[in-house]
Image 1: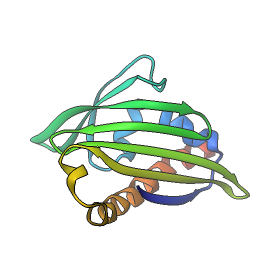
Image 2: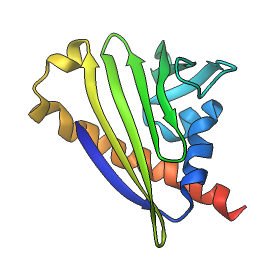
Image 3: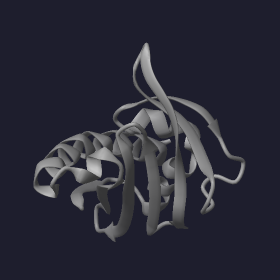
Image 4: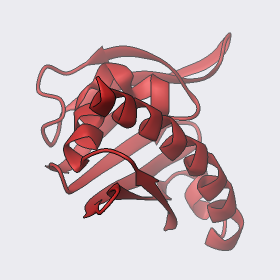
Length: 146
């Protein structure tokens, strides 16, 4: 699993408040172009977030499913992006004297991307998720300041 860490200058609860708002997903997930809908039960396990990815006009509609939700410590999502496949995405958050440390792990779980050797696919995932965590930090830290 490709893993990234980032120190956020906010509380773990601020991070999970952003994760809980499915309408914010496109603001922090690199590659997501729009949110088409969010199940009323989001972020409960089994709830779906309906999104599109890619650049217009070549966007693909798919969903992300919440697999596990244990705020403010842990969440697991199954992000679908066919025809590329599916990814398992895990967030673990722990307190830190200057805020919290967010660990994000992601790897291909099904589809064509899962067939690429981990040593080749994981550097790209880590690169992308470095920016994803940067965006998530902006939202969570901004929420903490307001």
